[in-house]
Length: 84
Image (cartoon, rainbow, N blue to C red; front, side, top):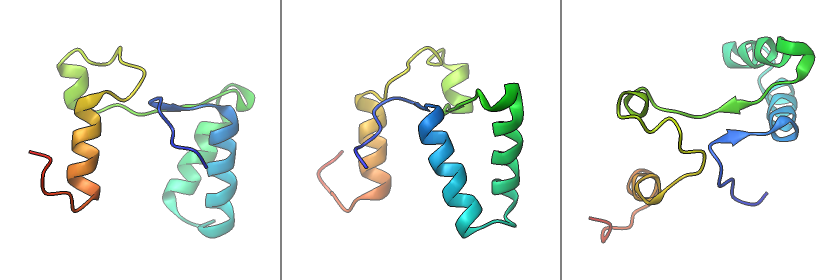
């Protein structure tokens, strides 16, 4: 699957995630939450990522991951020591 560059899952991506969660963790509370989200507006829904701090800092309008998100991602999920 190609890297997702936008901060939300479209309907097809959300459906893929929900199907995967229902197959692998059908009794998990997140799976149930995803089912509730999917049920909103008769399945016409998506998931959007955003941080609480981002909303306070007025970055809620950024629909795509920016350079700061890239740095935080690399710092958190890789062993790259030359980030900072």
